[in-house]
Length: 97
Image (tube, rainbow, N blue to C red; front, side, top):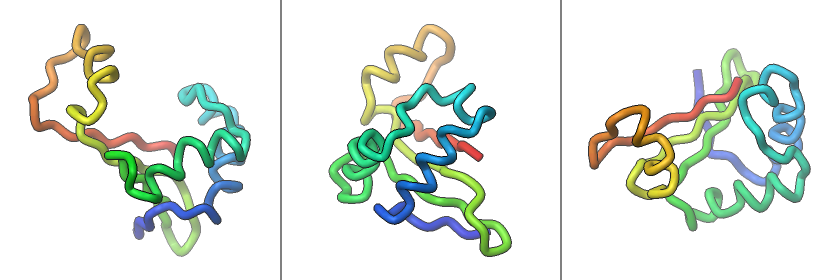
């Protein structure tokens, strides 16, 4: 298993993945290249606190993994706070495969 930081060259693949029914069911995101660039370019440029990686298995890309600190996203923290208690220094991982 290998994890590479995303690059702009990954955007068409991300767009395709977001259109796959089992991914689209769980991720309500615009799969257009423009929307992908708007969302992920700040992560590539390290302008956002979230890191995004392409997971590879056997040399083939198999999914997107993102790592973030909850305290960097206070609106998200407020949204999930009624359902679970998040420690102040907690990090999260989102996976889409």
